[in-house]
Each structure stands twice: as C-alpha cells, then as structure tokens.
Image 1 (cartoon, helix red, strand yellow):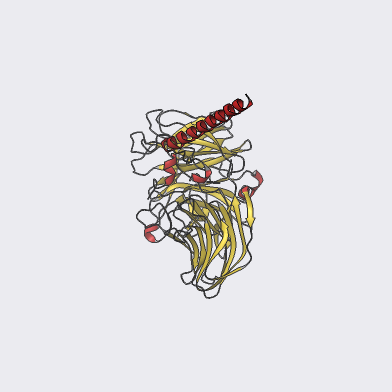
Image 2: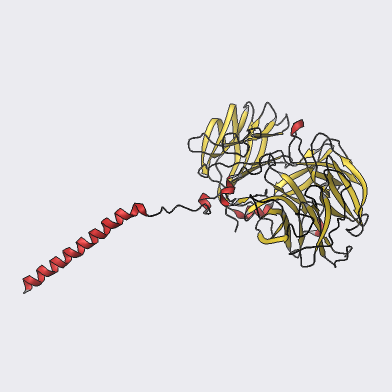
Length: 519
C-alpha cells in the first residue's frame, strides 16, 4: 500500500508539472499577440513639457497680458485658443502665482465670441482703486482689442467685480472706435500719478498713439511716437524706473521687428521723459531687451513691494515667433505655448546712456537641486564635462587672450553631432546662440544663429545660461544682454562640453545646478 501511495504521489506531481509547462508554453505563444505597453508622452522622461517654465495646460497660448499684484497674489492673463489647431479665436485665460515660479490655472476669464464684437485680443487690465469707472472700488477694468467684423480693430471695456475670475462687457460699443486705419490694437493702460489720469497707448502701425481719460471710458488723443526701421509696432509699454544714482526715467517699450535693418525681432525700448501727454526719447535709436529669436509680445509689470516700485519691475514674454508659430513637437502632446522665465529688470547708467538690465527672478534658485562645481578648466579644442541634463542653469566666467571662437555645447548628443552652441566670436565682438546643429523651429533655416554685441575691449565675460526642454536663455553678467531661443533637441541629448578654437580659453567659477520640476 505504501508503494502504491508513493506511485500515486509521483504520478500526481508529474501531472502538475506537465500542466505548469503547458501553461508556460501557451503564455509564450500568446505573448507576441499582446499590445506593447509603450511609455506615455506625458511622463517626464518622454515629454517636451518644460520643467520650470510656465506653459499652457492645453491647446494654444500667445501674448501675455500684464500681470497685476493684489491680495498677496499675481494675477496673470494670456491669450488662449481652446479650439487650436482646428479653430480660430483667442480669449483671456488666467493663472495665479505667489512667487512667479509656481502657477495655478484658473480657467477662462474673458471668453471669446460671446457677443457681436468677436474674439478677445491683447489689451491690459487695471485695478480701479478710486472707482473712476463706476463699477465699484477695486473693480478690475480691462481694455481689449476686438474685431467686430473680423478685420477692423477697436477697443472695448470689460470689467470684473469678483477679483478677476470673470469679466462682463460694459456695453457693446467701443470706448475707442477705429478711426479708419489698418492697425489699431494692443491697448496698454497706466495710471499717471503726477497728472491724476489714465493714460492709454495703442499700436498704430509704426506709431504708438497716446490717449488720456478720467474714467476709463472717454478717451482723448494727445500725441504719437513714431519709430523707424523696426517694422510694425505691437504690444506697447510705458513705465518709470529709478537708477542707482536716484535718477527717475520713463521707459517706452514695444514689440517690434528690426530684422530688415539687422536688429532683433523682440522688445525695443527708449529711455526718456513723459509729460503726461507726449514721450520724448533721450536717443533716436531703440535699445533691445533681448537679442534672441523668441522673446516676443513681452510685458513688464510692477513688483509686489509698494515702497520700492521704482527700483525694479518684472518682465515676461511669449517664447515663440510669428515666422514659425506652429513648428514645435509639443503639438504631439496637445499644447503649444511657453513663456520665458520671469525676469527682474532695473535701470542702470552706462556712460551717458541709461539702459535696462535683466536678471532671472531670484525665486528660481529655490527650485535647483544637485550642484556641480568643476574646477577651473583650460580648453584648447574640445572638452566634454561629466555633467548632463535637460533642465539646468550654468554660470561661468570665460576669459581669453588669442582664441577666436569660445563657448559651450549644450544638449549634446552622444555622437557629438547634435548640440546648441553658446559662444563668443572674439574678432566679431559678438555673443551668439547657434541652434543650427539640433532640431529647431525654422524650416527655412534663416533664424539659426542669434547674435548680440559685446565690447571690443572685452577679454572676459560672465554668463548665466538657463536650459529647459524647449528653450535656452543666456544672460550676461551685467544684465544688459540676453538671448532667448527655442530649440527642440531629442530628449536623450543631454551632454555638455566646452570648446575653444584658435587659442586657449579659461572657464572659471563654473557652477551647474539642476532644476526640480515645478509642481
């Protein structure tokens, strides 16, 4: 009996093993028939969603609208198209922030196509603390461009009594009708404290028109400022800043296109004086707040400290260009729209000229994590660094005596064929960003290397470079020169190397800081 039971156990065990083997065979046969589980594009490793730049939640974003600070929060509106890419028309979508780094989406505040006046274009919003318009103390009043017939541009008033969450149109008649011109848009409204009135600027072709009002409803033309050789004016701007020596100056700015005359296609500005009716520039030629290809429709806005409002301002721009607005891989992820980082801007005097200087907002430093500080590096030729990444900032001093072309290759591929170059051409006295050797938005290949002038006497320069998945922003040490550009390297391209041609360059005080994703 014992032997019989043993034989039965052996047979049962063998049957179990045979069954398990059959199951394994079946699974092996069926495995190729199962759909492959591919990583989703929304994972950080496979997404072009920026790590630390503000981007639209979905669909389309273009022009920023000047943010307002009240109740401890920055309230930011931007042009948004929920129907992109199959439908047209923009509206105002809102985001809020405490520090201009972390943003919370609040949805659409001024919807498009809600009346006969069409969709919502660029404008500006003010807080009517004295109830000059009659909608209540601290009501938000927005003056925006709308095209009633789809072509002509007129200015309409919208207001909010719920803190900017929603807006209503006062009535369907324009507060500034079109006088019969083609370009008549992008109103910018400020409060003129000295003359106790509202001032409005309009983009009118190559001219900026000035208007005045006591109630935000009835506007009178006062003067015009005409530009030369910088194309069509858009998104005008007007503000005051105080230099370190105590001098207070007015700054008139606008987005413009100076490419035909060898100038940038970004934010032009003039420093001068404003008497309440007319702006007078200290110099005829504009200065530029950015020399890259992708810093457009910029706005500046007041800081959060009322006792130091004249000491500094903030600035933010749309990182794109109307020459190639839809050429981005982010469209595969159902969004197209990224802002530059927020900058702090100051007024400084260089010789006899006042200029704006830019610095990345300090709150960004709180989002950096691992820091690498390589030793001082002498380069003659090429040298790869033991660092990599897709979202980081680099600071370094670069000095030279005889080298002709010096710089950094960023987002470099493992085979060294793809990279973005940030460098100095010493004989041309130029700082440049070259995106020719990686994926970039300009199919015509006319906008591949942006340049900015540096002093012919320079033998040393300090650079701070901010890299993200779809952008690169380069700041010089004194803050007078910035270059902002889009680029779309494959996400696996993460190398960093240094180069010097025609001589030796020294890279010192080198620091690399990685950015943590903004939650």
